[in-house]
Image (spheres, rainbow, N blue to C red):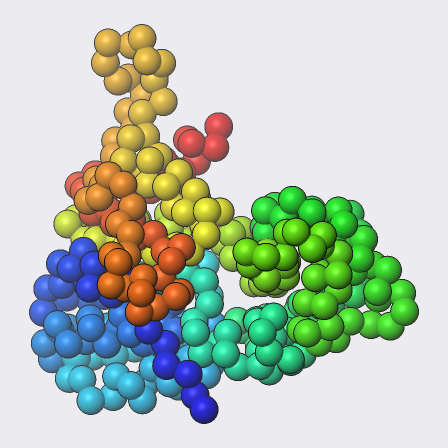
Length: 324
């Protein structure tokens, strides 16, 4: 049975976009098409939706779902790290709104053969773009123990990263680790019994592997900078994150772009010449309400941040300044 993807913070995101009927809007993570469908509903036949996803299956699903809407629709199989090139090729260098719904869609988690979930038995894969070479099986069986420990700690925030990495290396000496349930069992066995009660022991390991396979954090900052730079003045950017590592990057990017001044605090006025590219619509992240939390378990860790493009400034210049 095919699972239904329930878009998180849907109403809040659509409201945050302030959709103009004849505008151009980009869904950088098309996924199940939930946010795109609501955008299409608000667009007239003069409006445009650009839907981007690495996953060919996601694109096919979304095209069918959105076929009846009258707006102009452009579907692109690509990674949102290439957002600037995608917009140039489609002829829309400035757009009215952009959405990022980060992470994995429900239907991807629920397809055993995609290898994203420790709940189903399937091949260790985790590729969002199945055309790429690197998958979870190669990482688990060929990364050194130190490399495994590093990604488990950095991408999974796994406190037992050393124990889990060591357990994986010991197991693969006996035979290659090829399935999700094999890996989940190895991780579970490495955990003390008292730490298994609250959540599945393999959750952080699977998150870390997925992020490494798809280079999710490595590409996020650059993609956000591109998005800001390609918004029209008054255009909105909505970003939904699902774990602290993602949200931290989004928050840091928005802080830099909304307040890029690098002058010492004791200076009476700014002399660095850096000007904001955005203003924050929500000072704090928007969280799901009680009703959504009850209806959609995927919403529990979700955070939505919204910003608006302002006149002047260059997002790339601000980003480079923040790195010095």
